[in-house]
Length: 260
Image (cartoon, rainbow, N blue to C red):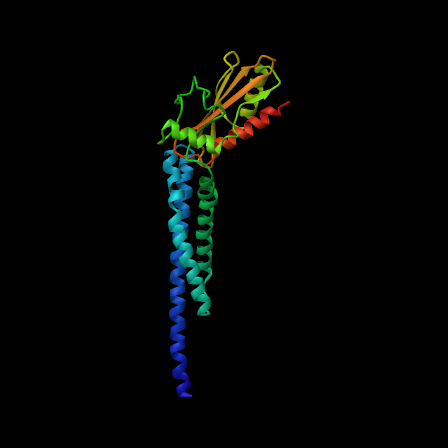
């Protein structure tokens, strides 16, 4: 019996050590995940209400990817260790791994995957040869970011060939009025609406951070009494818009075409 007792003692000591390791990993992974989430949410919220810059508020989100992945990996390995050692007390480790994994997934779904499908540009237009120009808002003739105009054009032609002017069988004044109604329904800030010039300028927002994108809609009469509609959407900051401006133009022109 004495020999049996001597054999059990080391096993009990080993299990206690395993529990200690799992608890420490749980505190580390859960604490790290909570810190990341708080920083990301706080920065994004401050930027949303313009208390800090938009890029400063968005930065922690994409910079959280690697720390979140590391925490997720540590958590998964820790859970595997706990299962192998038949150790309890894994609640914190499981929750921390879940939160870190969710943050990793969010960065991939909202930024990495969409960003990989679109070019790194943020000025999208229906007319590359003669982009609609802003007369009230202070926007460059073409906002190419770090690229030359030729590079920007090549990116645009390759990915956004479907974004073209549309023809609507209505007079320009009616089309512009419909465009304004759609813009207001979307919550855009109308900056200028000039029926004589055939121009509508507005500011839209994108994402939780509410990045500011400037939009211009241009209506031009056609000889048969219909109206050609051009549109341009430009992000104020950043390089890639992750496809927001192109999606905005596609959606808006589709709704404008179908407006009663």
